[in-house]
Length: 188
Image (cartoon, rainbow, N blue to C red):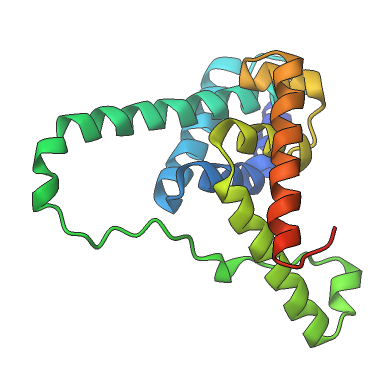
């Protein structure tokens, strides 16, 4: 059974990555924040009695399900109000502002020149833009495997699919990212 401190420490450790992952999926900062907060509340309310080592997988699954629920609600909302589209303003903006992305605070980046740091930041922005363009399941598999550093079986469990599907989604995501980034002149 996880103690209150273990649960709190776990939630603090995953909040930024979960928020970033949610932004990649929903492309709306407020919605992403709501999704992460709802996921954290669900974990605390329903699974606080679970052992601390089970919390990461439970949280990833809850986060995935909460994100899917958000998409379902959006789809329903859009269907209900589709007749009113002509009255809506066209000021909606799906663009994400990556200017607030911070470079890693590792010593190597701190010792880089301004030119190298700028180049690195541009590359990170290009990579993030290409990740946004991936199909939803590929993006989810890629982020769980390489952002959250889950293994194949953990990713399959979090996504509710087979390990083979995870491998396929990851492979396709990597191929798509490699091709897109190579076309932009970014080498791995």
